[in-house]
Image (cartoon, rainbow, N blue to C red; front, side, top):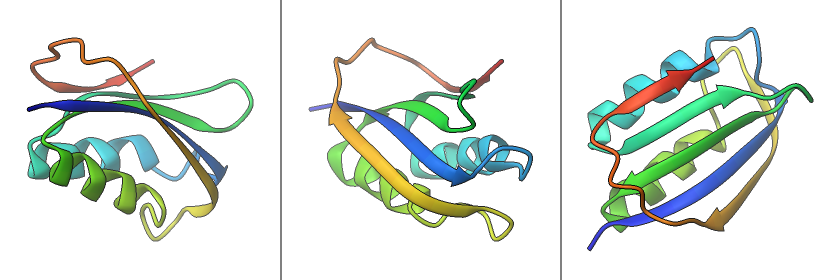
Length: 90
């Protein structure tokens, strides 16, 4: 049964290809949804898929790419939307 979470990632996460790497990781894990930069400097995301895959993407967000410096990841349960792919939103 698919699950969904909404995440907010804070720290040095913009201008370091965080979204592109998150998209790559999501596709590798089979997670759908999206990721985008927020005006406050954080990155927001909505992840859908099997619990294990979604949890793995959240765990990846706690580290991010080597160029990022993640200070905090907030996660809350979300509603599934039936997303069929993962996208970077602008």
